Length: 190
Image 1: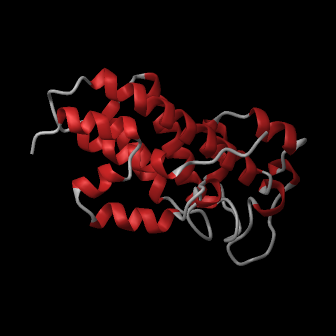
Image 2 (image 1 turned 30 degrees about the vertical axis):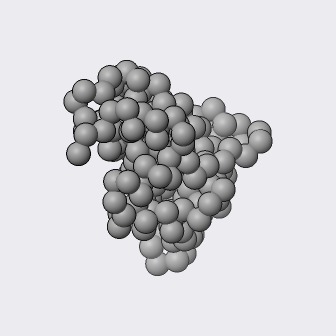
């Protein structure tokens, strides 16, 4: 599979759409057209990242807190490669909620998996507000060493996360795609 990349304007479009959604005059279905494509991409990226992390389960999952390996053969997954490709996100969540070593899996990945499940449900329901909320949460989540999305971005995510929290509406819109900028010009009233 070719590695998916999140582009800078897609990241900023999430926040531009969030701003536009505050204007009750804007047709929400028009915003959903732009947002759903981005949300599906986030979901594919996150699903891929989760399955990649699961490759460590038999080695690092079910570790004792004192550092000694206490896995029982019962907890190991036969043909882990096949399982991680076909399991559901809910099944992955169960595995991440089990004890892992500090360097892999565990609660950080359980949080990522939980938000992916939430995003998937919000996409099914075309729930604009919830999709925006879960995308924002996914942007902030870290795995065991850094932001999990960073390796799937073509820009330095942490810098842009900082900027989006510090800047003005006009700055955020200036970072968006031409389509979102156009919607903003046509519909925004301060």
